[in-house]
Image 1 (cartoon, rainbow, N blue to C red):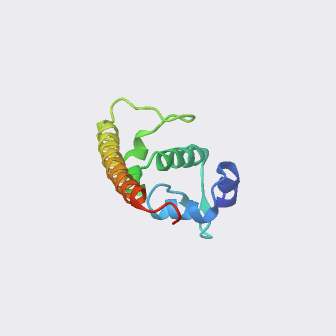
Image 2: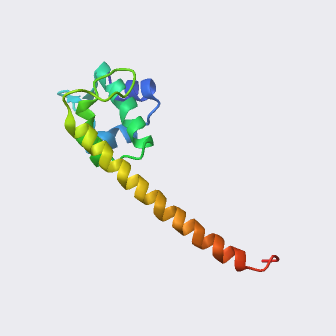
Image 3: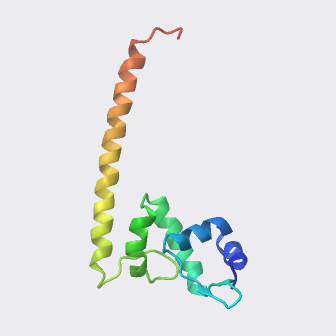
Length: 120
């Protein structure tokens, strides 16, 4: 399938699909005429990429773990792929730390707002 077909099948723009390729997340075959040729497995890969991005992972981390995801319909923790679990744990810790920093920022802003006069 061509890039337009993949875009329609996944709801992801062609531009974003090209970006995923630049990041090493997709590896379409290049035909003699330079066109990208995708396979059905790329549809599932794009869905997995979108889910991992929504979970807060960067494309760099996704590039490290995407090969571990084999299930067509949903993300599952595969056996025999320890890097997947390790990367996810590191990302979870990073996200938790970011949440702590954001909550601290919110408390500081709340304290400042509490001192503001009501008409401001």
